[in-house]
Image (cartoon, rainbow, N blue to C red; front, side, top):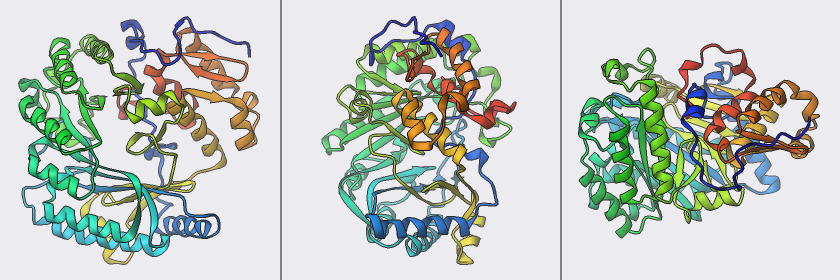
Length: 475
């Protein structure tokens, strides 16, 4: 296929905001590609037996070739109050005593995993998500960290991060997190406008977040992330622009700007949102455009999808050097590694498999009481899945498909096997999103904003799937 050059005319790595016309054209839904195949493709035929086999295979391989570092994820599902926009797996309760039963189960699951995997596996990344991990008391967090340190060998320089609801922490609590070894924090902010906060049932003043971020810096945390959402009820281009300005003044190392997906038929809390208060499509596009321009003007680098980082942040450095990776926690600076996930609904990646735990506490508890790993579905990747995953992750992380690298790694004739996909990419090249070269496909600077749409070209099940609205917006 002949080389097709993008009209973008921008040097690699430059920050270029997309036009409103392009944002409107690609205002569609699609996966976030924290995995491929995506979690909605997992099957119940993959269960505890298959996951245990994947763990023992890893253990056997490590005994021969050395043990590769692990990433570990811990899901804490509890929240004291419901945020109406939320699509996470959570349990709303003010009864903190419920955490004790959950931690008993969590430790049981950890013991079952270690039994198959082997104790002392090297750990390079640890992330606590939820729900609200800071729902746990200091003593309960101590308990979980003791169990994890007894099960895994924490490596020097390991990234240990936790999601923080600003309403649940103080400076003293942040100091305790630092003592436990956490070195990265992710604050859930969503929006600073009081009317928007009230509409989504998450009221947290700007001053409160500002004080906590300042305290985090003084306590020596290595990285501070903040999450925002666009498309919430009562948001306007002007109000979101003000939030962007305020967030830029706080100067977190990383910012995630997610698109709100209103799916009340799937997520019950969203039924409390008045759909008439949601921004119209034109306003949603305008607020996204202004937010992107705002963060770039403040000196942030666009990483990919909905992530921004300061130029000297490890994530921005990794992007410049072509070392970005991606897992269920999003973009990462560390090499792709197996992920051991603990807790209700948590998803593990071991070898060429994905597996997901039971989504409800009763089912999670019942499986563990029966002595079973709480896996209820998953998938063992086929040869076709593996090559498509390599292509999609190459686009998501490096912004490139290298024909020869794919062909050598997977023993395929790229142009022959993916002729229909290359034809669809030619259309995206005419939009200025990619450059099709003799030896591969390269995202343009503008194309990075639409990387999910480009990756979707290689998502085989999605091409015949008419139910794309179950996903969030790609921009």
